[in-house]
Image 1 (cartoon, rainbow, N blue to C red):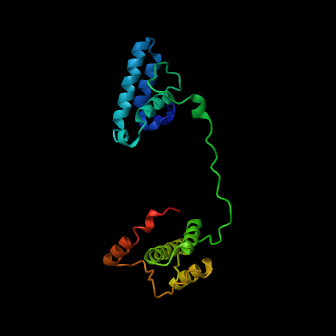
Image 2 (cartoon, rainbow, N blue to C red):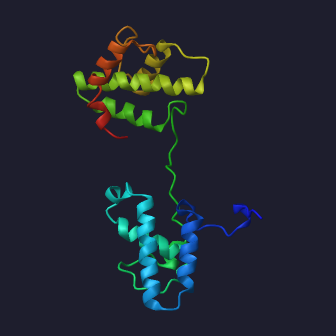
Image 3 (tube, rainbow, N blue to C red):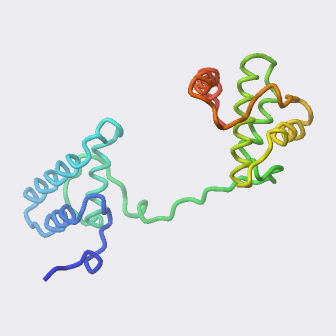
Length: 203
């Protein structure tokens, strides 16, 4: 008779599947310590072969695998771990709360990141880099505004908002930059090259 997974024991690490979990459960029943050690090492090798790409991505890849087999055994597997594995107390304690950013957002439809970008643009010296940054800023402002107002928005409003929120420090006329979202491929490629330096800055 078929047994549905929903009726079986919940897997602590479902990414390894129920077969690997059964291997760990079997290792717990092995009385001979040396045999149990060999079994655990075999299971870890199987777990590692399931995600080979992670070998290069995680510097502590092997330790992660031993952590996982400890978790899957509910920390009851009595073996000689080759690394220091995570403690049950550490694993079960709730994560620390991430504090939310405080402070009122002046322009909610644009968001806090755009607010920071405007402040940064005001500190930049005039030149090609500032012009590229302001163009990127205007395009982002329009995208954010449209996300709030599906009916669309006139470019004139975006330029006026940038002038207002920058307290007049950034005064760009509508004719200087076209914010149309239907650029041809040549224009998009040129603008992409122009903004390469800008994307390196994080906000």
